[in-house]
Structure formats: structure tokens, C-alpha cells
Length: 473
Image (cartoon, rainbow, N blue to C red; front, side, top):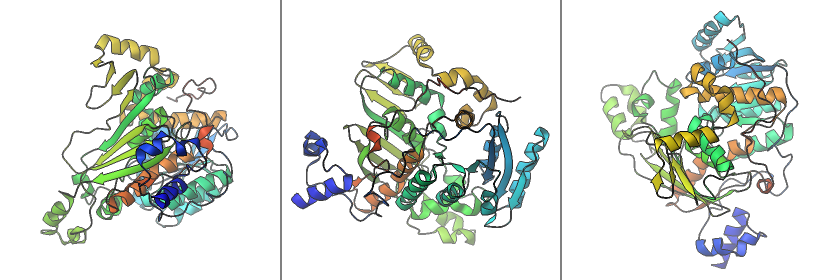
């Protein structure tokens, strides 16, 4: 009992805090076993190299961008960025030449002529080596995200990465330490933080509408079974390969990011531990067998250790709040990210649509909802929301996140999402894999801020500065 408690305190970093002798640990029980064989946290014994939370990099009048990865997500971001004032699209890179050429042609009507890089697995490094690029935008398969972002920062560029930012804890820590050492931004482009109801509830939380936040829920429930097995879908079947050997909550950030911002995780609260439970695989291996019966290509995917249909992860925070995150991309469910916010005064629930707000034990009326929406719609939505919907990209949230990133860089402002968010939100995947593999035992969540979460300022939606970047016609 004593040794277990000592290990728990040591790994979670609670030693020396008043919390260690308080009711939280008494509730948890000293007998809880927490992982002590995960990869070590680089530099955990020392303080931060530099606090990137709230860091404002030197302003850039023009943001020169190079894009890596032009398969699924990349071209949309390229076109989105081409509509934002002060952006120069300097280079396009993809291993497949045809993808680069298609994106180049999309830019022709706007008179944009970027340099092209393709055909060579190392071509992206040549692009990052250029001295006329400020930001590298990464839209490649998951396992390439962290290495490319690290290389970009090492070569003097800010990095923006599609989700997730990393797939191992080692990579998460490498991103943190590289960003701190180079003082270059590393932003995971979690677009769901910029969806309209999520922004509304974030501002409501900031204004105290929910009272004290007690619990949050998020998810990625999206039927991708057929697309994961589609030869013409993801390049080299990379997403199916991820799902065929990793067993956990592999894609947590869409549902998790907005809840973390509402709870001020990394900025006043922190995650302490998580537990993950996963069902068995009911469908993926069966589909692989069916396809292999008529196409030998799919034989490589038969009898693999597939991720189960549903993974449910529960997180406990330092302030005693809870977060639930679910992941199911196989079952024939209606799409949902849940987005549930529960406080001492009110609650909100986005899915199933339409979104709802409750006060007490009753949903507000449509008229009351409109009144709340009018009062709490944040400045960023009032300023750019309608234009974002016209441009599109997941209903406008893609454009909102890109515009906000550029506006912050051009005005020398801190970003809404920093490297600690990128590392923490991404770390849920490998941590959940460990928990699932060890009979759903709890596992400690690393503090990537190394204690700075106690003083870091919450995300600012007021836009007292900035907001000056125009949308081009």
C-alpha cells in the first residue's frame, strides 16, 4: 500500500502539493496502480526551457507558408490560406507528383506560383531548408507529423500540424522541448475548437454561465469503415494500418480539445490520470476476410490486432473534474462529437443535433437559445463567422482556425493552441493504448507544462488586439 501510494505520487507529480494529502487521493485510494514503465519524460527533472503558453512570437507582416501533404486535407487548407491577407504560399510538397500538380492548378486563377516539391521521400526537408518560409503546414499521415514539425522548428519555422500532433509520448515530449528551445510555435490545427457552438460554449464558460465546470464529454464517432478499406482512400492505406495494430483511443482531439479549453486544462487545471476501456473488434477483421476472399491485396489485413469498435476514456483532473472521450470509427452510428458541458448552474449538449442548452433540469426554449446565442457569441465569430461559412471547410471552422492563426502571427499575438495542448491532447492515444493493454488500469498523464499550468492564462476570445487581417475576394 505504501509503495503503491509513493509510486502514484511520484509519477503523477503530486508530491509536495497540498492535494497529495487531501480528499482527492483519499477518494482515489492509495492502492491505485499507475503506470511506471512508460517512456521517461525528457527533461522532467528540470524546469521549462521556456514557457510557450502565452508566448507572442515577433510579428510577421507577411506569413510565408510551405505545405507538406496534399492528399485529403492539404488542398483545402491551401485554398483557405490563399484567401487571407498577408499570406504568401511559397511552396507545395507531396510525395505524389500528381497531387502537387492538382493543387498548383487550383492556385492558378489566383496568380499564385509556388515552388513544387515531389517524387522524393526527402523532398519535404528540402522545402523546410528554404530561408523564405515562416510557417510549415503539415497535412501528412499521422506518423509523419511529429518528425516533420520538429525538423521545421529546428530550421527556424513555426509549425502547424493536422491532428494528432504525435502518436507516441516520446514524440509529444520532443515537440515540447523543440518548441521551447527554438521559441517557434507548434500548433496542432484542432479545427473543432473553432466550430460555432464550441466557441459559443467556451465564451459562456468564460462568462460564468455554467457556474463551476464539473464534467465534460467529447467524442469522435464517425463511420469510416468503408473508407479505411478503400484502396483509393488514404495513401498507402495508412489509416487502416494505424487501426490494424494500435488498440486504444487513436483520435481523441476533436472531442477533447474544446472541452480542455472550457476547463482551462494547461491553464489553471491539469489532467492527472486516465482509464480506457475498449470493446473487441466486431467488424474490421471480418471485413478484411471478406475482401481478401476475392482480392489477395487484403490478405495482409486479416487477423491483425485491430482496435475495437468503441473505446471509452475517462480522465480525472487536478481540480476533481472528469472528462469522458469516446472513439468509434467502425460502427454504423450517426456522426457525433458529443460536446457536453456540465456545470453547477447549467449544461450544454451539441449532439445529437440540434445543439441544446439546459438551465436546471429543462432545456431552454428556441427563443431563449437565440437570446443566449446573441449575448455570448464571441468576437471572432461576430467578426469573421459569416465569411468563414461562405468560404467553407467543415462548415467554416477550417477557415476560422486558419484566419485566426495568420492574424495572430501578423499581429504578434499568442496562439489559442500551443505546443502543450498539441502534446497533451495527442498523448491521450498512447496513454489509452497502455491502459487498454493493462486491463484498463489507470495511467498518469504527463504534465507537459512542468508546473506552468498553475499560472498560464486562459484562452482569450475577446480579441482586444488583432482582428485586423482581411479576407480577400
